[in-house]
Length: 114
Image 1 (cartoon, helix red, strand yellow):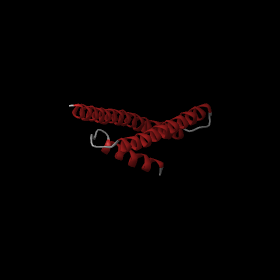
Image 2 (spheres, helix red, strand yellow; image 1 turned 90 degrees about the vertical axis):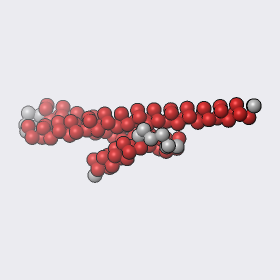
Image 3 (cartoon, rainbow, N blue to C red; image 1 turned 135 degrees about the horizontal axis):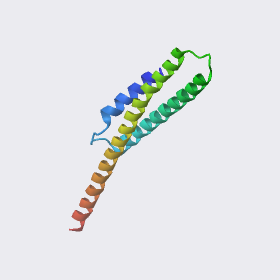
Image 4 (spheres, rainbow, N blue to C red; image 1 turned 45 degrees about the vertical axis):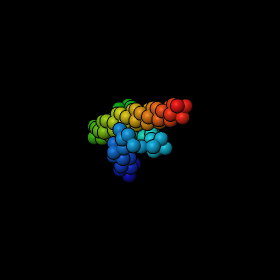
C-alpha cells in the first residue's frame, strides 16, 4: 500500500512540476508532500540497509532473503532520486513564480509613481 501511495504521489508531482501557473500555495503544498515522500523513502532505504546488515551478519540467512532486500533498495533509490529531482523542479518553479510576482509589484509601483 505504501508503494502505491508513493507512486501515486510521484505521478502527481511529475504532473505539476515545472508548471508556471501554480500558485505559491499550490507549490508549498506540493513541496511539503514531496519532502514527506523523500523522508519516507529515505527511512525505507535506511531500514532496508539495516535489515541487510542484520541478514548478512546471520550465517543462517538464505540468499533469497538478502536478494529480496537488495531488490527493495534498488527499487527505492531511483524513486528517491526522482523525488529529489522533482523537489528541485518545484523549487525552481516557486522561484520563478515569486520573481514574476515581485516584477509585477515593481511595475505596478512604477506606474503609480508616473
